[in-house]
Image (cartoon, rainbow, N blue to C red; front, side, top):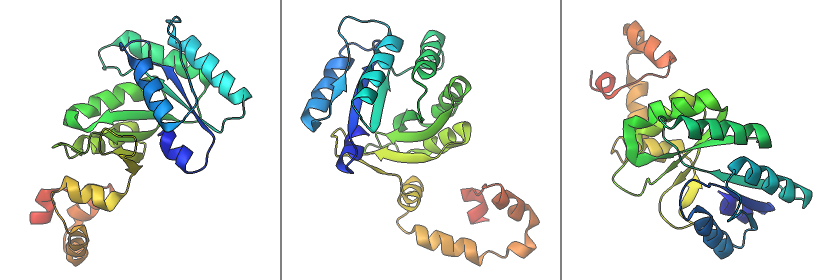
Length: 214
């Protein structure tokens, strides 16, 4: 994410507030150094709230335009980590809180995203690991649970494997179809005047494969 904005010409920096996962700071440090992105973290401070606050204050004072704060990954059952996330959010008051989801967890993403939303105001979603067998169906559940848009997708392990989210290619991959335009044409051909139930579903953004076949 930081590399993407750096390439766009923004003065970008990284803060590692992940004190839970072993080696998290080393990994961020390595990637940031490779991309030549200024970073902040600590080997001695164990409180992620302090690290996040100090890092944001440092980079703000130095005139950085984009400050990405990386926090620990967490599961919905880890209440203490969710409380920690809330404390970090309150301390730095971010312009945007982004929920990063692993495409491989599929439908389990819905409850995970909902748990995030209950703690912090999620403004956007990033879907990672779309290079594997996972097609990202859980991303739709995440969007529904957080009522937030998908803004980027990760398609590999390298910092360049990151792109802006585009609806048509994503849905095409999700359905295993190469011709999403053809699907749109089929929907346009539907005799909606004769099917009030389908009209109501479409108004609410609901359209399933069963509807298409029927």
